[in-house]
Image 1 (cartoon, rainbow, N blue to C red):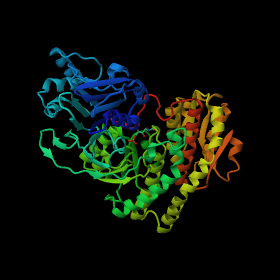
Image 2: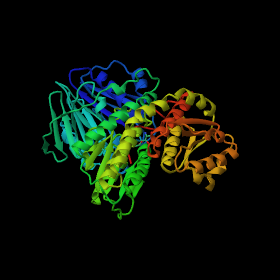
Image 3: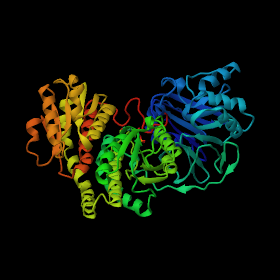
Image 4: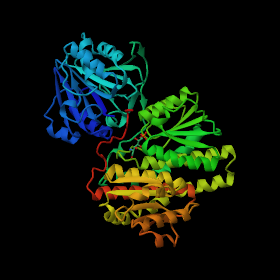
Length: 596
Ligand code: M6R
């Protein structure tokens, strides 16, 4: 993970770097630091987030520099392990995103040659290598350094003797160049520098870039120059402000009606421009991580129902190590960021196996959009809260539109049924709004359950993965232990943990699992658990079984996850808020997981 930024131009670099780091904070907030060049190098870093860094930062004058926000991998979040790292003489400063896998061997060799290490990080070897290879040319030293490194890296360095010059290199971890007028930028992602320019050049693996305020020079690791012109990005920073809400997460939950609408429109545009996949594959494999995996799991039910295509879902981090016998003609990778290393590696594995890959991605220009064979965009806009909400909902919508399209192509879905589902799709924003209207009532309930140490989330069939996602949302932002289970599985073990102190959230919408879910609610109620059920409007039975009930509009079963998920999101949000948790930046987490 980690976020990195570099600036060279006529502005005070400190200001540009700090504003960029604020926007990169979702990538990690264990520690932060900045190095400004101005004849000598001025490096300030500390444990804690960017606001803390700003509070300890003196005036730093200088027109070029680099900055870093860290998600700790090697060594705890303390000042010495913060970036930028400097060499023994204090002439070079370096920031890194990724993992240098051969750092232990390199460290031993460098120490034998007299280098003094001050941190426990894998990164520090790179700055000492730069020092060894430096001969008046930082770019040449960078090229020699990266030849020694194994693993993933986006590296950005400056040298106090090379005024106004920044050198970066990329292998696996993302790096984008922002092209300005008499100024240039480097960053882990576009929003970090979008305030200053919308002209971007995406670096590819195996490339080195050297920036001065007037020039961007891209070369491959061997030094051969690469010509690539900038692209104008169509993105706004509107999403980067809280807009009157207490937290980004709440704002993003309430944006869902709009982004659903945008994704439906976008899916049609995508379809017109034609994401070029075979719409009638014999089998499908979905790969993703975290919340995106849960979306994929819901997608499995949609695809199987509407296209009759056997579909399996696998965690990306596991797929990569599975035996080479997979032969699904279509592999769908789902990623909000398009930068999750496990998912990117799984896509590469699928391609090596000769399979067709489709990426369902939110961030335009991200690595997955370039690496997957085809792309279907979700249109959630920028999501700042680490907990995925609107991006997950738009993944569900994208999967539903894809399933309808494939169903029609396969003729497993009649034209009239497809029309009916499309009509239901259009009603989704309104239906989600009616769930959002229950936010205050969900808050009242959250007050009753926020003292719990443990919770269970139950669902069956297409709402089973929603239970997994509900539990993930609850645990990641409120730190309450929560487990998602299929309703029928509880009695095979976990029921032993259910007591009157264990709230159970049960999805009991009117579908073919309804009666069975009532049975499961009975089982946990009999053990004293408080049951919070999510049911379908018009159901007169459910409140006889559950202690509290929230209702979603009556929609076709395949649409229910989009509405039941919103109840779960609000429940997690209000619970975490009542507990005073750091909702947008939960401990130990980062939004974009670019380590394996
Ligand atoms: O960017 P991605 O969708 O690939 O991210 C995958 C997971 O890291 C992510 O969904 C994570 O689980 C969420 N932030 C949890 O809310």
